[in-house]
Image 1: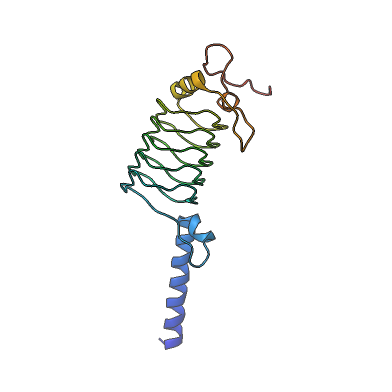
Image 2 (image 1 turned 30 degrees about the vertical axis):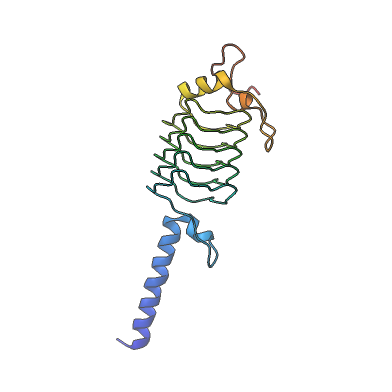
Length: 184
């Protein structure tokens, strides 16, 4: 085997490896040289101040982030699965398109947050403040949705959507009213 064909095989293997990484992690495919995706998987970031940062497409899965400041943070497209955010400031946060299943949102401040298309099944929002939050197309447990409707008020300043409308709350008793097919 010649040196040229050995180098060619090594180069092909390396390119194949890089392509497999891009397929396995689409976030790597769009990064530019020098860019990094923040990673706080299973980290203890209790009390950290992230105010105003761009943490989009990062992973905070399994992290303990109690009493942290995530106000005005861009977290769209992140993974928050199994995180504990109890008591954190999430005012104005962008959680669009996030995977937030089984997250502890208890006693968080979600005023004016954007939570559109968020998957939050198995999560708890007990004691959270949601004035002006936009939950449009968010996947929530029915009990959470009913309880959030009981205190839903305000209009999100970024999206212009009312909290009650985004949660699809009924006008009687604050419960959930599923939309009728084909009716707007």
